[in-house]
Amino acid sequence: MQAPNPIPDLFADMGRHIGMSRPAGQCLGMIWRAAQAPCADDLTLSLGLSRSNVSTALKELREWGLISVARAPGDRKEYFTAPSEAWALIRAIIAARHRRAVVPLLDRLLAEETRSPDARIAALHSALEEVSAWMAELGTIAPHDLASRFQTEPAQPSPQKRAKKKKGKGKSKALKT
Image (tube, rainbow, N blue to C red; front, top):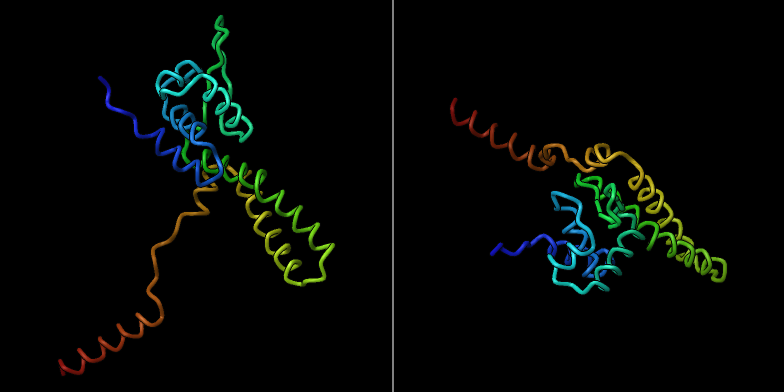
């Protein structure tokens, strides 16, 4: 008997935090991790989900733009693939969240801004437009470039820590003389 695969549950939990259904997260985890592209029947068997749950989850994942459909010559079944590179998957998720959540929110804020004289609404709309532009850019750049934007340089000591180090060195020199 094979040990259970924790990846589908991990993806289901992650998916919940970005607005995806649990079955969609489980299917994405299995598709992303699969050595060969699975079909819906494979997902049904390996995840223990009903065929209708898998079909609905696959439709959701296609709407998110997170999976692609592939076909094998002479086979009527659809097989599903996901970006195998982590940063490509993250880029697709950013683009989907932008499209599905941020853009509609911007539209609602714009409508409220035209109805309300409250300057805070206009300021919020303006700030969210900047976030939206940033997300839109991140959702289109190459995975390697996306990764490099998030990589951090080694932390530099703060000016306060540097000042303490200098004081400490000064004291030790005074003691040596």
